[in-house]
Figure (tube, rainbow, N blue to C red):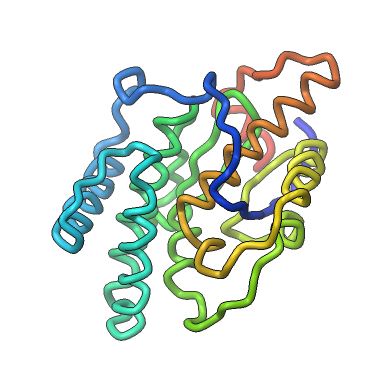
Length: 227
C-alpha cells in the first residue's frame, strides 16, 4: 500500500451517489454486539427526543443532524453526558456507512472514540465517533462558511484516511464545491456526502489509471500501514 495522509472536507448535500456502492441492510452482516447496542441506544435516544425513529437509511441522517445540534447545547452544560452521546451517535453514524458500503469495524481498545470503519472497495477509513465528538464540542456561534478545499489536507484526526494518490483526487473534487456553513460542515449528512464524493473520486482515478474501479481490500491491508 502507498503512504497515506489524513484529509478532511465537506460538501453541500448534492453529491451524485454511486448506485453500486449502496448496500441494502439485509445484505450486510450483523455488527459486533457492542456496536449494535450503542447504535440502538442512539435510535432510542433520538426517538425519545424527537419522536422519530432512525432506521439506518442515509435519508434519515438529517434527523441525526438535528438531534446532535440539540445535544451540543445540552452536553456543553452537562459535560459528563458528552462521551455517552458521542459514542452512541458516532457508532450509529458508522453503522449507516457500513451498511452503505462494503466495510467493517476496527475496534482497537475499549474506547469507541477511536474505533474505525474501514472500506473494502477503496482505501478509506475514518473514526465516526471522533467526528461526532468534534461536532459536539465545536465552539458555539461560529457562522463563518467553511471551504471544502481548505480542510482535505489538514490532518484533522476526525478526517478521512486515504492513500496519497487518492487524497489528491478527492481534494481536487472537493475544491470544486462551494463553501458550506459551520452547521452544515459538522452535520453527519454532510460528512456522508464527503464520503460519497471521496469514493466516486477514488474510483474515477483508478479507472483513469487503467485499474479496476473497486479494489478487494481486507483488514490486513490496513494493518500493514499501521506497523
